[in-house]
Image (tube, rainbow, N blue to C red; front, side, top):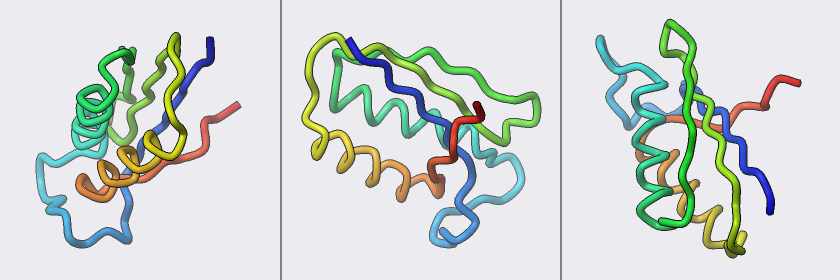
Amino acid sequence: MERIELRIVDDPRNASVYKGPGHYAATRAQAVIRKIQEAFPQLTFEVSSDHLLAWLKATAIVAEPIASADFIAVLSAALEATGTRMAPVPG
């Protein structure tokens, strides 16, 4: 089994997504996780965010193999659609 850990933050370069008042990166990142779970129902993420909703951390255990190319395609599309990006997970 492998572990997937994602830290999703705002993508300031993505100007095509509305990010006005009430649109927080962590809220938009939850949409990313939902899209991943729709494409890969075998994944269940545990999520947490900071109190300012600036980022979302999502962790899942991969019990069944997932094609990397398929996962990356779904993740990339979801990030683009929500105006978010991946951030390094702090060590």
